[in-house]
Image (cartoon, rainbow, N blue to C red):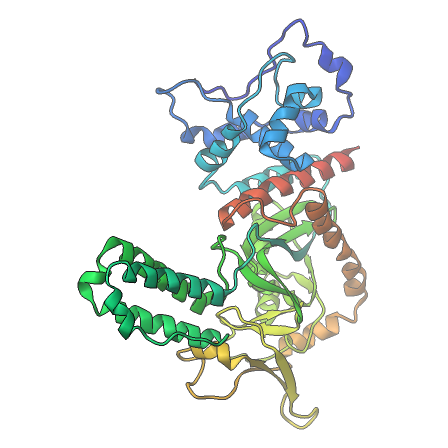
Length: 483
């Protein structure tokens, strides 16, 4: 039988809670503020009601995960602390003498019960609903930004991985037929990735030419592994245990490997929407989703406050259609008219460069044309053609044999001229002063609740981590404003 919410089992020791856990304790306040039975309603379908032993309450299991996020501790430590910390026991609705779970149960709960649930939007919706109910949210603005989280795994050198896996394939072949050594293609002795990829492709073809040999399990396994590595290298140029993490850019000369969480927040510092993506994604294209989710969560939006990444033509169009003002400074790279392939190339405002469809950052830009000469000026961005030559997306993008790969954008449009006029108004100048608040929120997520690094592999786990961290900071903010 699965209980909705485990109540404190009264014992001769239950009165200790009133003596030991003060009224202003954070966990006591969270228990009083939130009815956690919504967790039971969401997860009840993940449990069997007729077979097996009685399961631990999903509400209590969720609270264990919440404690992990609030205090940034491991599974083992949160369970150990709940053995002796009376505020933990009170929050978990345990009797003082009650035993605790095995730490491994938390891993199973995450993988078996929380998987495939849209926990991120569920928890944000719950906290925003509480904030609206308590009359906390009064502003009609959302502040938008993205924060990055490093992957749990570092990317490996693609060249080193290719060489290791081609070596394992050769060893598997020689163990069966040493005579194959004589016909092997010549190894690449340089540090050029393009030549290493060419060697690996030649090695694959040579071995596949011997049909019976490449069907032997020991060889087939290593051959498929090399093929997969070549494909991953051509597409991403980085290899890692974390398949979903990608390389993003914080500035023109600094990068990170991991994920981005795109956030929307009210002026009262309540997060209203979040979208988790891999690290190479641009900030601007996520604005429509953040706006839509915020509105679905009950937020009335009249202004969107952000940095220059959000002042793109499409975002201004969407905002205008809904009579919403975008309080974001224009940049020449974004303030452009007709942009070719605008659905493929994203602008990275931190690096001040465009990113191609394969996720590679331009290394240089130059401005062409002169002001007031009848034609708009254009910024031209230059990409590394050595990467273009081996890119799987090069068809239709890079012309074979070309010495350069560029991408140009014009600098003006009528819509942006209207935005330029808005930037001179008092409304814009007063609203933009609130943008710093989301920087402080990003700092809280990272420095207080461990959101600077992923604690598990994969984007689903990153979304789960984000859900718990945002749920925590929203509850803490609501309690502070209520006080």
